[in-house]
Amino acid sequence: MQRSLLAIYLRDHHAAGVAGTRLARRIARADAATSDLRQVALEIEQDLVELEAIMRRLGVQPDPAKDALARIGELFGRLKPNGRLRERSPLSDLLELETLLVGITGKRALWLSLRAGSSTPSDDLERLVDRAESQRTIVEDARLHAVRRAFSSEREG
Image (tube, rainbow, N blue to C red):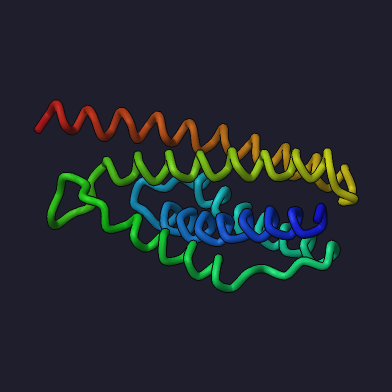
């Protein structure tokens, strides 16, 4: 039973990582992206590769159906109204950064959970926890900048 629960947990986080990687890539391509955000996107891709390596060591395969649903969910997230018809809204940047921040927080929790309850080497997990914390700091700074951009443009318009 424990093995099954761990497999489900890892597959769920993998699916979230698939969606988060796509979101991070899109944020990195946006006009407002900084070199720090582009670096975070690369690290998030690396984190997914690290998760896949951990899953392989534990004998767990990703769930293609969950991963596909995550991709579809990420695509549907782009369709939300953003207050603009023909151009990208500053609100889109803000909401995407907030979504990425939630994902990074969840990924950090994953690494902490694995450190507490799996046979994965704790040095590897500690490095991943530290990287997630660094990513959170960078994304939070970008999010606050996006707040100012979004709401100051609203006052001007």
